Each structure stands twice: as C-alpha cells, then as structure tokens.
Image (cartoon, rainbow, N blue to C red; front, top):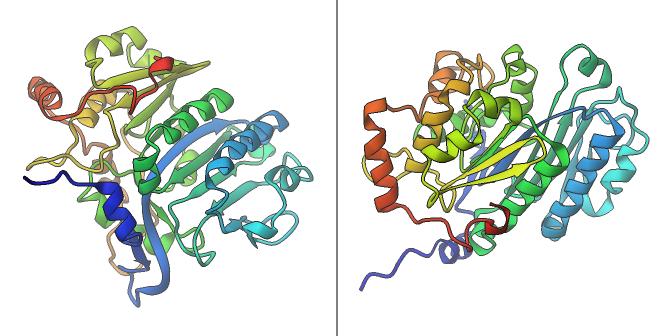
Amino acid sequence: MEQPFDMAAELIKQPHVLEVPGSLLMKGGPGDYIGAALCLRATLYIKDAHTPLVREALCKCFDEFQALAADHLTWVVRDSPPQGERVTPYDQARTLRKMMEPMGENDFLSFHYTSGKQSKDASAWLFSILGPRAWQANMGNNIGVLEFSVPLLFQEQNPLSFLKLFHGFARRLNPQQGYAGHAFNLSIGNQDDNQPTEAFMAARMPGLDVGSAFLLSGRKTFKQAKIKTVSWLTLLDNERLESAGGLEALRAQLPASHFAFYTYDEGVIIQSGAHPYIAGDGEDLRPAPYVLINHLLKPVRYESVESLHGNSHAGELRLVGWSADQWLKRLDVDDSSITDWRLKLLRDEPPLDSTNSLAELL
C-alpha cells in the first residue's frame, strides 16, 4: 500500500531544498549566497508607524515572534540607521525596544531580523518592519509594512502557531489590509538581483505571493480602499469589508467547512482552506479555496499596481507593467465555473477542524 507523502519528514531529510542560489537568473550569476528561500509569510499594511503607540505594538509583536524564533535568528539588518551599525549579529544586537528608544518620529523605521548563515542570505525566518517618517505620513504617505515568516517545516510541525501570530498581530496593529501564504523571501541586501527568481517561480506557483510590499505601499494606488491579493489568510479592514459586501454576505457565499472568519477590532481575517496552498492539484494549478475567495473579493482588488518588481537590466524576467497586472488576475475564473470550483473544493480538499483552525475564535 502506498504511504501518504510526509512533508515534514522530507524537509528534515533535505533542509536546503527550499533555498535558491543568489542571482541565479541574472547575467553573471549565480552568486555565493542564498538569494531566495521558500517560506510561509505574512504581510500587514499598517498606519502610523512613526508614533510611539504603534512602535510599542510592533515591539510586542516581535516579543511574540522572538519566543518562537530566537534560537534561529542570526542577523539584524537596518537601512540607514540613525545610530549603530547597518548589520549586526543577532546575539550582539540590542533589543528592538532599545534600538527604537532614541529614534525620533522623522527617523525611517527599518529592522530586518533574518536567520541566514551570511547576512546577505535569504532565510525562512524573517521579521521585517519598514515605516515612513512622520513628515511623509503627514504628506499622505502613511502606510508601513510588517512582514514575518516561518519555515515550512515549522508550519508542518506547529500548524496553529503562525495562525495565532497573524491574528494576534492584527489585533495589536489594526492593519488596513494583509495576507499570508507561501512566498520566497529574497536576500535583504540584494532583492533586485533575485526578483527574476521570484517571477520565474510565480509563473508556476499561483499560490505564491510576489513583489516588494514597501515599494507598493508608497504608490498612489495603495491609497484606495482595495486589496492587492488573496491568499491562505486574507485580511480586510472594515472599510474594505463593507466594500466587499459585508461579513454576513461573504460568510453566506463561502462553505463554512473550508473557510473561517476571525474578527479583530477593525476588520476580519479570512482563512481559505485547511492549510496554505502553493498550487492546486491536477491540470489547473490554481488552488480551489483561493479561486473562490478571489472571486468574491475581485471587486475590491486593485486594477493595477504598476509593477511588482524593478525594471529589467538585461532582459531577465520581471513582473512589471502588463505582467504585474496579469499576476493580480492569476486566480480569476468565469462566473459560470464557480459551481464546479465549489464542487472541487468540497470533493478534494480537507475541511477545517481543531487541528488547522482557531475554532475558539470563530
């Protein structure tokens, strides 16, 4: 009898199978570093990151993350810090609170905690904060970004931990929008050279998130009350939720056996499926849970984000212009096929239960 595939066992045997050499698809590549690492990643778009209240909330979020990740973290990387070094070994760095204390509201908020052997290595453990200065916020550019990620092996062995972090961080930070699912973390020091790897993988993995979140957060389009994408976890604040028809309307159109709704003070988190999907099974690689939630939230999705990557240097693949907008539409299907997708979900995909969802928060 054929044994079921054991993801955790395979990842233990081959821990580096989810890492991609740096600058792999660039002219002159590959480089001697890890350029991309597959992981489970959350992205939250937050306001007022220049204020003491939000900065303390971010520190509390890191306290929770650090409780899980401390044994794995190796580096703290900062962009143009007002004091201290740009790169510091994690075990020699001051605490996040201590580093934030002397910072003024017009200092750029930038902290990246990683777990690579080298500081430029992409890694599956990540806690990254980027927030605009007060003067930028006062000019209308008030969206910062918190991203955090865990290895896929950790998710397999601790299926509720990431979900609890996401919900807890949402309650503390009251984000405008957010999502969580499979992603490739790129080298903090060299994202540009590894965006072609991300673009190549995205064409084959429709469940994969792509693009620089902080780059997008400064765009004019991001001032609209819309969302970038859907994923395993999709977060909408109340304004976006009402634009999508409201909580009860969404619940009525999604099978409770496969979709969970978790509220926080200013919005809702929707869990689509018992586990994250990087792709579906069969000829059509689009995951059924993602197709169904995408169909409902398509009216509140951005029509265009201009670009997800920087411009090409020598013809290498990147998601810019038309190709970036096509990525936004990757899960779109005709209205006439929704019944078939719903049947596929109910027939082929595992339901939610207490081992893969937060039943106490429903």
